[in-house]
Length: 285
Image (cartoon, rainbow, N blue to C red; front, side, top):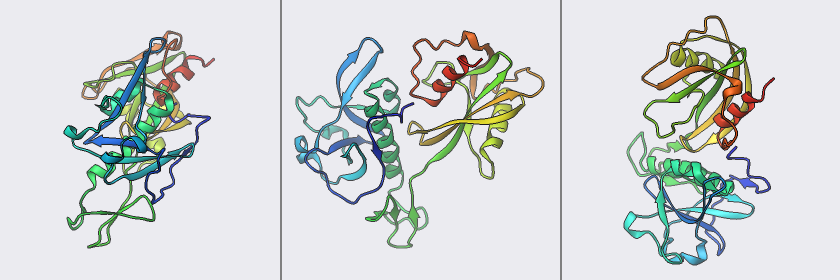
């Protein structure tokens, strides 16, 4: 999955530091990230990207914010206006949104991008205090914004959600989202609500989206997913009772039972938890 970047090591401990010569600068404009496209790999249709080092773009770095570290290299956020995209070796940085990173390589660059986009969105959406309206300031001790007027503290938003594989003997419930950029088959998914356990979320989301009940709910894996500021929890469960699907056509365009042997996983990209689960289900005996 996208967070599986070994042998690289990710360190998200906050540090109040400034960039070094080899630090990576991630330039953001609203919810877009500036990258340089190096080449496209025809074998897997992945676009190889890279980011500038601090030593090459110093003049454009005015107020860097430390993000995280990968293999001892620190990454920083720098906000820019679109007309001020910095010159960097032929000035070929381009702004891309978070959906772009489904097709990005290497995996460590895709993971860094989505994690940085997650943090950038939090900074962008929390410029002012929600209690008193004063401008928030950065803590020097931890990843936190605070209000000097009313002492309100704001931490990064992480939204828990579930991905659910519902099994019906040799079949699995597959879906397609309605009105989304992503058009491939997916699994039932939804956000955890206040007062719910994750298992209760599984039961509710499956019934809301497909009109069926489930049993034998068991945990599979989790995944940080900066695409939607999520932490995703994967679950596998079994149909409980009637298999008649009543699809929520506000959320989905397709909801159907598919034989596990018919799942097309030959060239599936398992960067996402959904695809990782689909591939796992296809191989279950």
